Length: 529
Image 1 (cartoon, rainbow, N blue to C red):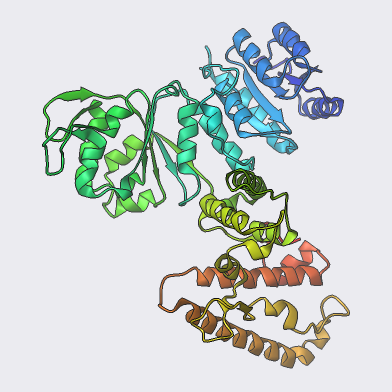
Image 2 (cartoon, rainbow, N blue to C red):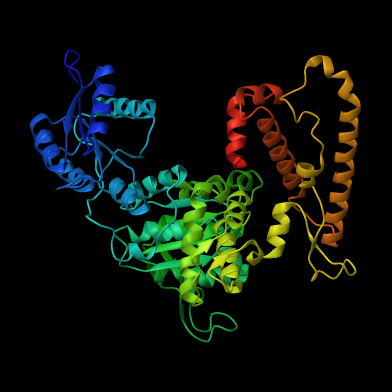
């Protein structure tokens, strides 16, 4: 890059305000912007100036951004193209990354972020002398890929889509981590469906569901008569997936002896069926998944380190549903539509109470739990609107910190009567400062008695809540009770102080003794308005 001449950047967007904003931003930061109103004009300008970095919108007349991206790569493969859009989804993100985009941003974006990305792109360009390999270009997702959709366009899922787009065309092993129910197998299927192996088999196996004595036969196959019950020859999963993809869920649940055999197959790309002598060449792409802490499994000696490194060439972490709450509505709508068709229902809307529950519940079972809750609610609903009464009672009780109880003996759980718990703090606690914000310091001594009385009430409520929880459980078992109570108290406290200060976050953070970033994070976590 010439140090005298300003670095050039092509900006293609059909919105005049966006172009002007980029022109001002780039000029101010010592870049030379080249502005285009559509894809056709952008391609002409690119051929003329050949700037190392381009920022292009997807939705443009004449030639859209993805088409422009591919044409740019044909002209100059080592161009760094940043794709932006207000309408991001899984398919567009993956396609852009497969087609060689440097990054994919969703509008609106922060000026500092786009400038940092442009600077990184230029730095990368300066480091290369030939070309940056670009992924194979495809105009659309394959037909098989369209069968598997990941719902959600949150920033964290956008990062997952980008990585899928980058790795789909390769044959390297992938390790997918994430909590149970977060959608690891769907991610594996999307990788397969967007790969050159898409026309071949995708074979999935849950390692934790197969007894140790049978897993070798499942993976490698067996010959007739090789053991009691082997009445026929069986082809194993490695052979079935050869040329395609083998997905191993809960791979860390394999025993160490089986891990050794598995590692050898990965290294040699050949298997011998149980009870046989014939060496069979196999070539599946391996995608493994787990919901356990792999580093801990290594430390405890439950997972071979060499196998760990062999499987974790590329790592993809799937965020939990509570980490991507902005995707909940899209997921709920999708499941409602699905079960409307399956159950012949006509659910047209969701009540505000249900939507609030969806957003505020922590979903320990992640997408699988949301799917099951929606299925149950749709099945029960006899109207065209989902109400809170249609949500499984035990789920609502867990969310509210209450339980379903009976007016009969405690063992009879059919009658529904709610027992006050922490929620009562919102309604039963008197407000000594209803007329103003926070009392003057000179009044502190006069409120000491009130504070002691309120703390006494909280102690009594806590004792009542523990009693309710114990009676509901019957047997002592591990629960999320601590987190549930602490989260509820924290939410009530923050919401109460915010209300007292009329939403002023500076005063609220000072009063609570936490910094503003922490406060903002917790406001977002608990969806406090």
